[in-house]
Length: 240
Image (cartoon, rainbow, N blue to C red; front, side):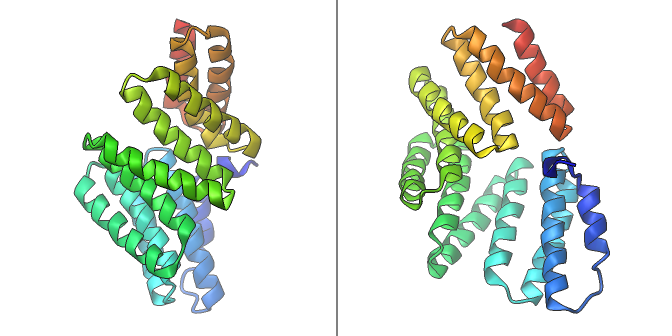
């Protein structure tokens, strides 16, 4: 079975099998499994289940005194709070997260968090400030040779450029991001970046290529079990 197809219940069952263990390695494994369950739950539209799993994982990391892992878990909690519209609480958690990564000297995790903050700024209409953060994180990821980070950042930049009506720049950024998703074999990236890229191709009049890209997204969303998204993509293809 593909890693992406494993549902939250699968990870939760594995985590439950380790419940009650006082062994450090098994406690850490349980926390990681709960985080995997939460990611699956979030992807499939179950934010409350995801939050429950992440808060349980955070308690384990706190008990183990694993500051870095606890901070990453709090960052995932913040993303779900943002999805639920609790923007100020999400921003507070991300700013705390940013300070800890700066203290720990974790440049990559700091850059990831800058992206989370940029997303919140965009939601508040502060797109210039968000773009500055994306430019900073792009420099960091390029310096680190982190293709995944570069691709994710370019996706964020493309969203901002499209919102400004700069469709040519948005298309160029989206194309680079999509190429990296294909190179890395990142199914979620192929789906979500492809959804953006396909629409930008259609706006540019490249309808044949748009259909190819959107068809990949359709197949990917089907594989992930994200049927609402699959239907959304199918409707876009039908309109081309």
